[in-house]
Length: 372
Image 1 (spheres, one colour):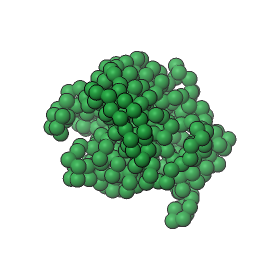
Image 2 (cartoon, one colour):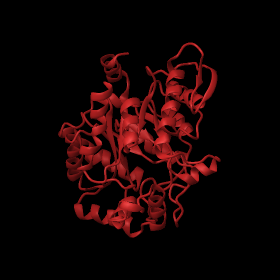
Image 3 (spheres, helix red, strand yellow):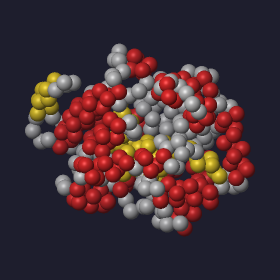
Image 4 (cartoon, one colour):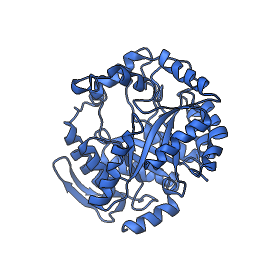
């Protein structure tokens, strides 16, 4: 498929590339704490019934994306943030069977899942969903998780070199009709084959969240969506560089999606109070553990570390969207104007707040032309 053929195919067949101006979704419902590192009481449960109810509600609202976090270990502290979690591939398979339109993703650590296994699992889920599966490809950053599998954490740029070879094998298994061998710096594999092929052509939608120079180049060359976590709206201008690089240097289309914590209430004061409650009950030990693992507290990152910690407690370091329904729509409209194709949401109380979002915010998004 050339570029135009791929565009036309996806517009017609892949929910993430439909005609909605701003695509929407939910993120991280599969892990305890989601994206709020707090001990504040919530309705969130890490049960299958709760997860399925949230994803079905997002599907009923017409959202395009259900994206889990790939986690194996918690972050310590009183909450052991993300320490209770569902496996991502089986989660996506179950959600695919339980829904009708929404795309169900897995978040796959390339160093922990063999490419032959990943290709087969992805193709299977794509058939379960009738072409609604997507794969978020992550290189891995949590050293303690790597230790659980007896593997070390590669040097940063080497992770992306390994990831590109891994992904190329997966893509060939999705498309090649004859067996093939792989002999490379990282793999020595013989007579590879995989059938059935995925429903989607040439394969499921691919996502990556890398924002380093190596990550940006990997995304521009290899995947369909750059998944970004802006800490403030102005960051989007920089994050959009990956879509421009993909177009100008590689002749490819790469969409830009962001994640955001949403705290929406009838009045701004109520929304601010709910947001403050997350912070007042923050698990600062778990937040700082995560920041230390990511290197946020080292070297040049020391300045402003307290503000960074606040953003990790309330939204994994992203820019929170806080306010009335009208203010939330204004903020999402600003994201769209800056070139964002879609936003996936964190909520403190997924079921309650997603239902409220559907009742109060979705109609306003339609009025503004962001949805139809």
